[in-house]
Length: 239
Image: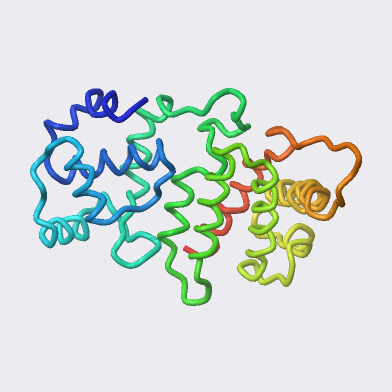
Protein backbone atom coordinates (compact mmCIF):
# COMPACT_ATOMS: atom_id res chain seq x y z
CA UNK A 1 0.00 0.00 0.00
CA UNK A 2 1.47 3.35 -0.97
CA UNK A 3 0.85 6.57 0.94
CA UNK A 4 -1.82 7.86 -1.44
CA UNK A 5 -3.84 4.66 -1.01
CA UNK A 6 -3.37 4.82 2.75
CA UNK A 7 -4.54 8.41 3.08
CA UNK A 8 -7.64 7.53 1.09
CA UNK A 9 -8.37 4.32 3.02
CA UNK A 10 -8.06 6.09 6.38
CA UNK A 11 -9.77 9.32 5.26
CA UNK A 12 -6.71 10.98 6.72
CA UNK A 13 -7.43 14.46 5.36
CA UNK A 14 -10.75 14.55 7.23
CA UNK A 15 -9.09 13.83 10.58
CA UNK A 16 -7.99 16.25 13.28
CA UNK A 17 -4.37 17.32 13.54
CA UNK A 18 -3.27 14.70 16.10
CA UNK A 19 -5.09 11.92 14.27
CA UNK A 20 -3.31 12.94 11.08
CA UNK A 21 0.00 12.69 12.94
CA UNK A 22 -0.95 9.28 14.29
CA UNK A 23 -1.88 7.95 10.84
CA UNK A 24 1.21 9.37 9.13
CA UNK A 25 3.40 7.92 11.90
CA UNK A 26 1.74 4.53 11.51
CA UNK A 27 2.21 4.53 7.75
CA UNK A 28 5.91 5.36 7.94
CA UNK A 29 6.39 2.78 10.69
CA UNK A 30 4.88 -0.01 8.63
CA UNK A 31 6.03 1.05 5.15
CA UNK A 32 9.49 2.41 5.96
CA UNK A 33 10.44 0.86 9.33
CA UNK A 34 10.58 4.39 10.79
CA UNK A 35 10.01 3.67 14.47
CA UNK A 36 10.12 7.25 15.76
CA UNK A 37 9.52 10.76 14.47
CA UNK A 38 9.89 14.38 15.49
CA UNK A 39 7.98 17.56 14.68
CA UNK A 40 10.15 18.24 11.63
CA UNK A 41 8.98 14.91 10.21
CA UNK A 42 5.37 15.93 10.84
CA UNK A 43 5.90 19.21 9.02
CA UNK A 44 7.40 17.32 6.09
CA UNK A 45 4.49 14.85 6.00
CA UNK A 46 1.94 17.65 6.07
CA UNK A 47 3.88 19.59 3.43
CA UNK A 48 3.85 16.67 1.00
CA UNK A 49 0.07 17.00 0.80
CA UNK A 50 -0.13 20.78 1.07
CA UNK A 51 -1.73 20.58 4.49
CA UNK A 52 -1.52 23.60 6.76
CA UNK A 53 1.83 23.71 8.51
CA UNK A 54 1.27 23.09 12.23
CA UNK A 55 2.46 25.40 14.98
CA UNK A 56 5.51 23.39 16.04
CA UNK A 57 5.62 24.29 19.75
CA UNK A 58 1.87 23.76 20.16
CA UNK A 59 2.02 20.47 18.25
CA UNK A 60 4.91 19.20 20.37
CA UNK A 61 2.92 20.00 23.53
CA UNK A 62 -0.18 18.24 22.18
CA UNK A 63 1.79 15.12 21.24
CA UNK A 64 3.42 14.97 24.68
CA UNK A 65 0.03 15.26 26.37
CA UNK A 66 -1.66 12.68 24.12
CA UNK A 67 -1.98 9.07 25.25
CA UNK A 68 -1.54 7.99 21.63
CA UNK A 69 2.22 8.69 21.75
CA UNK A 70 5.23 7.94 23.92
CA UNK A 71 8.76 9.30 23.91
CA UNK A 72 11.05 7.93 21.22
CA UNK A 73 14.51 6.50 21.73
CA UNK A 74 16.26 9.86 21.31
CA UNK A 75 15.49 13.27 22.77
CA UNK A 76 12.72 15.17 21.03
CA UNK A 77 11.31 12.15 19.22
CA UNK A 78 8.03 10.27 19.64
CA UNK A 79 6.58 6.84 18.92
CA UNK A 80 3.08 5.44 18.70
CA UNK A 81 1.79 3.96 21.94
CA UNK A 82 1.16 0.21 21.84
CA UNK A 83 -2.64 0.61 22.17
CA UNK A 84 -3.32 2.70 19.00
CA UNK A 85 -0.63 0.71 17.20
CA UNK A 86 -2.48 -2.55 17.84
CA UNK A 87 -5.79 -0.99 16.84
CA UNK A 88 -4.36 0.26 13.55
CA UNK A 89 -2.67 -3.08 12.94
CA UNK A 90 -5.98 -4.91 13.22
CA UNK A 91 -7.39 -2.82 10.40
CA UNK A 92 -4.42 -2.15 8.13
CA UNK A 93 -1.47 -4.43 8.96
CA UNK A 94 -2.20 -6.96 6.21
CA UNK A 95 -1.84 -4.16 3.64
CA UNK A 96 1.87 -3.95 4.47
CA UNK A 97 2.74 -7.66 4.33
CA UNK A 98 6.15 -8.60 3.03
CA UNK A 99 6.60 -10.66 -0.13
CA UNK A 100 6.24 -14.41 0.33
CA UNK A 101 10.02 -14.79 -0.07
CA UNK A 102 10.48 -12.83 3.18
CA UNK A 103 7.63 -14.30 5.21
CA UNK A 104 8.41 -15.63 8.68
CA UNK A 105 6.72 -17.95 11.14
CA UNK A 106 5.32 -14.89 12.89
CA UNK A 107 1.98 -13.82 11.48
CA UNK A 108 2.80 -10.15 10.82
CA UNK A 109 5.88 -10.75 8.69
CA UNK A 110 8.28 -8.54 10.69
CA UNK A 111 11.04 -10.19 12.69
CA UNK A 112 10.34 -8.32 15.93
CA UNK A 113 6.75 -7.18 16.36
CA UNK A 114 6.51 -3.39 16.49
CA UNK A 115 4.17 -3.63 19.45
CA UNK A 116 6.84 -5.56 21.35
CA UNK A 117 9.46 -2.92 20.49
CA UNK A 118 7.09 -0.26 21.81
CA UNK A 119 6.65 -2.22 25.05
CA UNK A 120 10.42 -2.46 25.45
CA UNK A 121 10.86 1.26 24.76
CA UNK A 122 8.27 2.08 27.44
CA UNK A 123 10.00 0.03 30.15
CA UNK A 124 11.30 2.25 32.94
CA UNK A 125 13.93 0.43 34.97
CA UNK A 126 16.39 1.77 37.52
CA UNK A 127 18.73 -1.14 36.83
CA UNK A 128 18.76 -1.61 33.05
CA UNK A 129 18.74 0.79 30.11
CA UNK A 130 16.99 -0.94 27.18
CA UNK A 131 17.97 1.67 24.59
CA UNK A 132 20.48 -0.65 22.91
CA UNK A 133 18.07 -3.59 22.99
CA UNK A 134 15.39 -1.49 21.29
CA UNK A 135 17.91 -0.39 18.66
CA UNK A 136 19.00 -3.99 18.00
CA UNK A 137 15.37 -5.02 17.50
CA UNK A 138 14.86 -2.25 14.98
CA UNK A 139 18.06 -3.24 13.17
CA UNK A 140 16.88 -6.86 12.91
CA UNK A 141 13.67 -5.68 11.23
CA UNK A 142 15.64 -3.51 8.83
CA UNK A 143 18.05 -6.35 8.04
CA UNK A 144 15.21 -8.79 7.46
CA UNK A 145 13.28 -6.38 5.26
CA UNK A 146 16.37 -5.86 3.08
CA UNK A 147 16.97 -9.60 2.81
CA UNK A 148 20.23 -9.43 4.82
CA UNK A 149 20.12 -12.91 6.29
CA UNK A 150 23.66 -12.98 7.67
CA UNK A 151 23.03 -9.71 9.51
CA UNK A 152 19.70 -11.02 10.80
CA UNK A 153 21.07 -14.10 12.53
CA UNK A 154 24.10 -12.20 13.86
CA UNK A 155 21.76 -9.63 15.42
CA UNK A 156 19.76 -12.44 17.04
CA UNK A 157 22.98 -13.59 18.64
CA UNK A 158 23.79 -10.02 19.71
CA UNK A 159 20.45 -9.80 21.53
CA UNK A 160 20.75 -13.12 23.35
CA UNK A 161 24.26 -12.14 24.46
CA UNK A 162 22.97 -8.72 25.60
CA UNK A 163 20.09 -9.63 27.94
CA UNK A 164 21.35 -12.22 30.50
CA UNK A 165 21.87 -9.69 33.36
CA UNK A 166 18.14 -8.96 33.28
CA UNK A 167 17.63 -12.57 34.39
CA UNK A 168 20.44 -12.42 36.96
CA UNK A 169 22.64 -14.57 34.71
CA UNK A 170 26.16 -14.01 33.39
CA UNK A 171 25.58 -15.56 29.96
CA UNK A 172 22.71 -16.86 27.84
CA UNK A 173 23.49 -20.52 28.51
CA UNK A 174 22.64 -19.83 32.14
CA UNK A 175 19.36 -18.23 31.06
CA UNK A 176 18.47 -21.30 28.98
CA UNK A 177 19.49 -23.81 31.63
CA UNK A 178 18.87 -22.15 34.99
CA UNK A 179 16.22 -19.43 34.70
CA UNK A 180 12.90 -20.84 35.91
CA UNK A 181 10.70 -17.75 35.97
CA UNK A 182 9.20 -18.27 32.54
CA UNK A 183 8.03 -21.87 32.86
CA UNK A 184 8.64 -24.94 30.70
CA UNK A 185 7.61 -23.35 27.38
CA UNK A 186 10.01 -20.45 27.96
CA UNK A 187 12.81 -22.90 28.71
CA UNK A 188 12.15 -24.74 25.43
CA UNK A 189 12.31 -21.54 23.40
CA UNK A 190 15.52 -20.48 25.14
CA UNK A 191 17.09 -23.84 24.32
CA UNK A 192 16.40 -23.20 20.64
CA UNK A 193 17.96 -19.74 20.83
CA UNK A 194 20.96 -20.97 22.80
CA UNK A 195 21.75 -24.07 20.77
CA UNK A 196 20.34 -23.72 17.27
CA UNK A 197 20.49 -19.97 16.64
CA UNK A 198 23.95 -19.70 18.20
CA UNK A 199 25.34 -22.56 16.09
CA UNK A 200 23.93 -21.06 12.89
CA UNK A 201 25.29 -17.62 13.76
CA UNK A 202 28.70 -19.11 14.60
CA UNK A 203 28.75 -20.95 11.29
CA UNK A 204 28.31 -17.74 9.35
CA UNK A 205 30.49 -15.63 11.64
CA UNK A 206 33.52 -17.86 11.87
CA UNK A 207 33.68 -19.94 8.67
CA UNK A 208 36.60 -18.99 6.40
CA UNK A 209 36.15 -18.45 2.69
CA UNK A 210 35.76 -21.77 0.85
CA UNK A 211 35.87 -23.03 -2.71
CA UNK A 212 32.10 -23.39 -2.72
CA UNK A 213 29.48 -21.69 -0.55
CA UNK A 214 25.77 -21.95 0.18
CA UNK A 215 23.91 -18.95 1.53
CA UNK A 216 21.37 -18.97 4.38
CA UNK A 217 17.66 -18.85 3.60
CA UNK A 218 14.93 -17.02 5.48
CA UNK A 219 13.88 -20.36 6.99
CA UNK A 220 17.39 -20.98 8.33
CA UNK A 221 17.61 -17.67 10.19
CA UNK A 222 13.99 -17.49 11.37
CA UNK A 223 14.01 -17.48 15.17
CA UNK A 224 11.34 -14.80 15.38
CA UNK A 225 8.88 -16.73 17.54
CA UNK A 226 11.46 -17.81 20.12
CA UNK A 227 12.99 -14.33 20.16
CA UNK A 228 9.57 -12.84 20.89
CA UNK A 229 9.19 -15.23 23.83
CA UNK A 230 12.49 -13.92 25.20
CA UNK A 231 11.57 -10.27 24.69
CA UNK A 232 8.15 -10.72 26.25
CA UNK A 233 9.81 -12.12 29.36
CA UNK A 234 12.15 -9.12 29.45
CA UNK A 235 9.08 -6.86 29.47
CA UNK A 236 7.39 -8.96 32.17
CA UNK A 237 10.43 -9.02 34.45
CA UNK A 238 11.06 -5.29 34.23
CA UNK A 239 7.47 -4.01 34.56
